[in-house]
Length: 411
Ligand code: ADP
Ligand code: MG
Image (cartoon, rainbow, N blue to C red; front, side, top):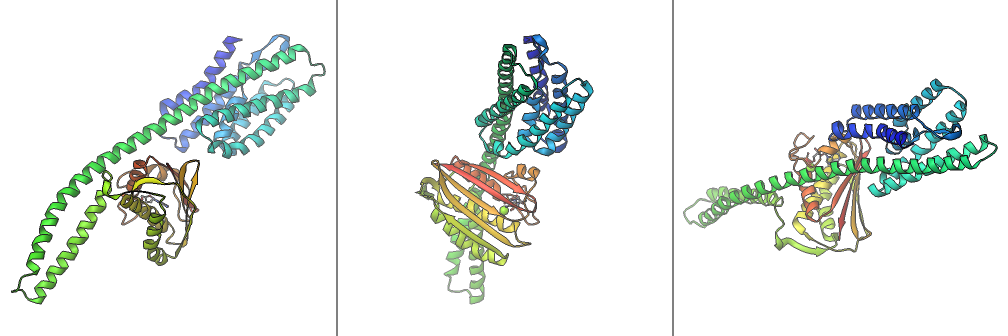
């Protein structure tokens, strides 16, 4: 019994192990197919080495990879497993083929329906969710068995208890490992992201400071020159132009400085309303120009300490990206700021061109841009600002449909 259990756990651990060793960094499409293939192999091995109890009762763990793939993926992903399971079941033969076919079809139809809810859960809840689903599937299995066996002996109940305990323990182990892998990848990405931000903010701060000094000196001398009595009015207009351009250069430099540490002079304790309204106002002309409407819904009363200029710049970047994503076909940029469990939740939704998951993973990398005149610094600044207030950003996007940025800031 214990040997079979260990063997089965090993089969099920195999795909997880391969995922950790080879695909942890990049879960591309082809890697996903390989994982499904590995899950199918695990499923076949589970069926080939079942638990055999006295009295000829047999059960195995075939539904564990099936349920896990169904919960994490969709119908498309679990379909190969469904086919493999039933083909192999036919290959084994014996009685109960049709019951097995019917049972697996029900599971195949029902479990992926839960996938969306499942994916929205936190890691811990996902483990519980998977355990719950496994429990129900096992219960359903024994419920159907009840009809085939007329006399439910005490052995039947012993088998039931064994099967429940084994299924739940194994699902707990496998799911905990999978969630651990996912959380490790996330933590590492966050770490790299913050390292990158640190580099760029140090660099931009030092360069910006260096440039600011000569700009100030030049500015001063030009102003002195402007007061000269011997100059023609034409010369004076040149100086005026130069001063204007200098001012612009200074503005760019201070924008760059928003990458660096927040300056306490700008710190405010507020609920973001002023910043959202300010940014909405200054973005109106730009949105009109691109046939985009802006809709704001503000219901947040929670307050937070943040750098006002940085926060404004952050919203400008997000709004601007949203508008730019819709500029070919028009659309509406909806902004919703609400409170939820001591978090300020900001949702910025556009119905623009959207992004692939590959593109989403590139967001926030310095100089990553798909636009002809893009700088690829906007999202970097956004991530920097939100990480300064200990918030997190979730991105959901469908190509051709639109993008939603969900920013959660704890207070
Ligand atoms: P830039 O706007 O200068 O290109 P950003 O850092 O602001 O740089 O954005 C980086 C890239 O992220 C953009 O080039 C675009 O491909 C993508 N992106 C950002 N926001 C959106 C959005 N709302 N919809 C679609 N793509 C987006
Ligand atoms: Mg941008």
